[in-house]
Length: 141
Length: 129
Length: 196
Image (cartoon, rainbow over all chains, first blue to last red; front, top):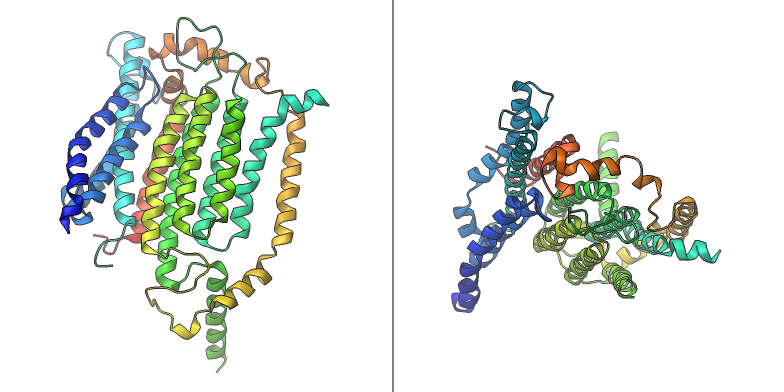
């Protein structure tokens, strides 16, 4: 039964690290070209979906457990809101990156935008993973 | 009259796409067909908004030293949010359809309404005894 | 010229996707529709939106629809289910009854007239709009020049769309992230067997 999956399994095992690397590249270069937090998060979730489809749902759920995706989903929103509160503590309005004590106005804004994109990417990847694993059929259903 | 048609005919094509999706949402009885129609409708509306932001001979809104005129970036930002919200809506709609299938055993809207009507009649008959 | 061919393909894919009786083919046509839509947006110079639609529309939505299809049935207008649920077989309608109910309660002609009237009203609304590609349209004159000029000096990023998303309109992006998180919670509440 597993013989027909040898080619697909081999190619997926080669490709999945590159897909995840590409997802991180898209998140990190969101300010130099098209891309950003959403696109990178969705591509990361697509690699996890590929792993679950090729190697079986139970194997995929064992690797990316329910507790992991449950904990990661609100952490992204928390990072986003937390950066806004940090800006209030540094003496500005909510989400005013210029007042962060990290250098000039341009550098502080740039680093604030990086932090926000990382938060958005984490939430989107975790939520897409959760939705796929809940919707697809498992064997005892 | 010819100027009116030349200047605006592509808006009319986008409105045709919107009406195709709208027709699928209200006429088709299968629940998954309705969700497919909803997706067609949403992407056609997003296409309409993005075509409103295009400027003649403009380039993509990324800063480039050889560019003279840029496209308007504001509709792109709003439609990015709209696409992501549409994915969330489709996910919740599919979860609801899965639960409906587990309860009623069918996915046709007419059959579901009929089963509901019969259940209500039985409850009314049992209540009046 | 190529825009005409792409728009023609879009309309053909949309009409074919809603007329198919086999649901798996309809979902594949929807995925092709999303991909051609992403190409059309690239022709309109909307690169960020095209990237998002290609990854989200032609990727995640197709997989979710097929996953939901694997839990329900594959054909349309069949009325037969593999699980009994709470209904006995005598309660379920036969195929001819479904088709008769389809005609009587659907009112296809009236729906077609309503759709045509809505389309005509929308076309009447576009007569007042500025022409396609007009650089003096009000949408390009209000606050867009300020965003275009200030996106490098005030934010330090080159991509204007990211600068507007994260700096000028940061609240909208916070709301959008919360909406995604809420949809994840809704799916967990609806489908999970044991909520610990």
